[in-house]
Amino acid sequence: MGSDEKIFLDAREMEHPVPLERAIGALRQLDETNYFYMIHRKNPIPLIELAQGQGFKVCSRQNDDGIWHIVVTRSEKLDPEALCNV
Image 1 (cartoon, rainbow, N blue to C red):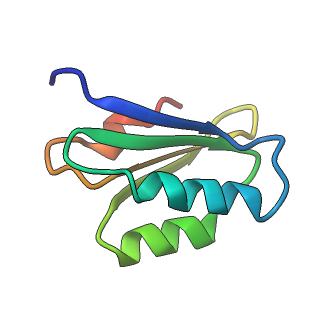
Image 2: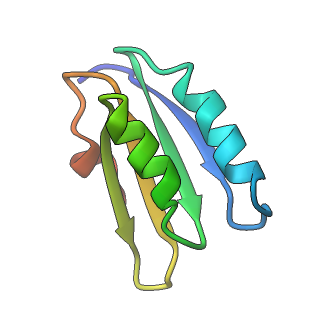
Image 3: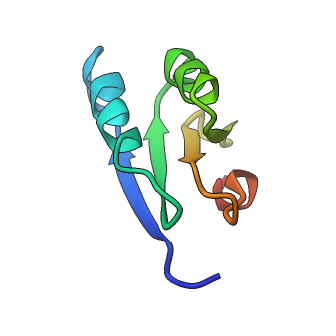
C-alpha cells in the first residue's frame, strides 16, 4: 500500500470543543495520500456526521478499555475499517 501518512490526534484528555476543532483542522489536510486517526474517550458523533456529510469514509470503534478509535479518509485506496486498530 505504500507510505500513507497518518495524522494522529489523542483527544482523551482534551476538553470540548478542542477535539472537534483540531479534528476539523486535520480533515482539511486530507487528500489521497493520508488519513486521520483519533483516539477519544467518547464517540465523536458530530465529527463523524460532518465527515460523512462531506464524503469522507469513516470508521469508529470502541476497544475493550472503552477508548474510541476513529479513522477518517478521503482516499479511494485506503480502507478505514482496516486502519482502525481496535
